[in-house]
Image (cartoon, rainbow, N blue to C red; front, side, top):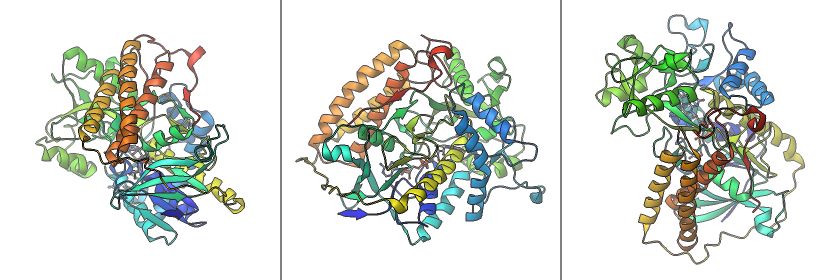
Length: 535
Ligand code: FAD
Ligand code: SIN
């Protein structure tokens, strides 16, 4: 089946839904999303969204904190525009019905702004500790009600369709025409055709064995864009969140940095605080510093976790300010009001991504990328806490501004797009190949391409992942595709890109730390690592 629409949006997190709602006023929008529409990283965001809202705060301060966190690699123009457009986009969310927490003692005095690592002011708007769920609730309801938006749940985007792929012409001025999408329940691959395609497919935390990310985060959009010939940047900068819950029954559960913002302190298992050895901001230092410090201490002491202690706050405060974390801990037998929480770092956020300009345009005409899948230049070598939701909403809006200028003049491309060709693939009776390789890649990335790297570890990772990738490619073309196989192929592509960028960067900066080049090298490396293959 061929489905024609003005805008094809891949993903229904904050970036995808914000763009869809805006674009629906000027054309038809198809949103494809591989699971239920609310299933996204957005839905699990806890801490909140950073923006200059307080009277004692200012744009210059948010810009300065973002630049410091990014360790010399942020694009200053982008940082300025994101910070300055932030409050307007917050107003949009509020106008649409998002309810951010107000000061409980005097709500008329405005929002209860949280503090997180690397921020010199309280500037994080939040809905208690379920900010993402509140945003996702409002946006998905609004999108669902719009007559111009069709949401296709359980529809998995497989590959982008480009002019180069259709004509076999290898040239740099490529054009995106749509995507092949697997209807998981109908077991059919449909052609979605659109003059504008927006990748809003989120990040790739599942490339690592331990992650705060939900299962959807398999880097599909990034892998598709790379295979289609888009430029990809800075994939070595993978952010590890310092505090994920350490408990055998807690899969991917985050303990928000906002807990440290309210005075939570990191301690060793023997109860001693250690962050003052690493940074003057102690437990509220930028995220790369805190994660590295915890990693060092765990290795030095042979511990599997450290502790996050907020027992100085009373039960009433904790259960009201952090209801999700409080309840989750309690359900696992941890009472955060009277005992410290065991935590470990885990893969959290992809700072690199599909390279875009200031209007979210990728290097392929007609293809936009916003949200975590994109590399805008905002985060540099390390993202400042709560700048991700901000970036998603600002760039979704900017993508809309650009397409609204372009749409009236856009003429339909005359290419006829052939339906998906399964090339004689048959059902597989060896799904063990998928689960084994899935586990091997994630373990290899965790062990060799984690918080601290070396030339040897990266070379080892490259050898193993290249081999697995070869095996997956053979398997891919022989057997009928399934979501599991697609995700495996995508995490393998993403893993190759992370390793390739990490091997390129011969210095330590922000989230990329290697014992072979332990210092920052501004003379040679104050630049992005960019990878592009022409299809
Ligand atoms: P997502 O919200 O991840 O949405 C991606 C969408 O794409 C999903 O709907 C997914 O199903 C869909 N998709 C993916 N692949 C395909 C495919 N092949 N076909 C079809 N659909 C596909 N950031 C902050 O700024 N503040 C926070 O407090 C914060 N807390 C966080 C807490 C957690 C636990 C996590 C995991 C992240 C947190 N982050 C936070 C990061 C932030 O939530 C994400 O970076 C942001 O929500 C990404 O939004 P997005 O719209 O780009 O992608
Ligand atoms: C958190 O709540 O700690 C996550 C914030 C973020 O990732 O920006």
